[in-house]
Image (cartoon, rainbow, N blue to C red; front, top):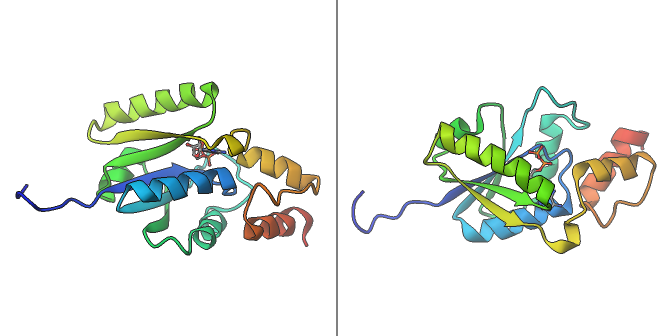
Length: 167
Ligand code: ADP
């Protein structure tokens, strides 16, 4: 590399985001400050049965990040390390809420390192405000028409109502 040339620091934040919560948004906001570009990558995971389609999930993320100039939203179905390479990114960002999250994340990060040692996984600790929050919790509350206004954006709230109650 030439002296003085600057590499763009690009991070990928992968996940299911079914749907995006304020816990995810907190990680996105904080990660976006650390990198030149942050790619939020929605996993098209065929083994999970999501509530929202991958395009709906990406669209909700695009609305939620519309005012963040260095954040983009994409969809991927490849092996994560290959996707990261393809995007010329160097870092994978993951959020950690609990010891249970940590054990699972450690396993994935170690596997990814074996597959491609150039890809670094960076963990960000959850904001304590959202340590209990998951997409599953949001879906469960919304299913029974409970109030999720403090857990998700207004657009996600509306999308949940439409999807679950046809409103
Ligand atoms: P996945 O199916 O890949 O776990 P999720 O959409 O559930 O996808 O989560 C994506 C990432 O966001 C994971 O790293 C997860 O630990 C993190 N995350 C989820 N909820 C929160 C939260 N409330 N606070 C911080 N990080 C979170």
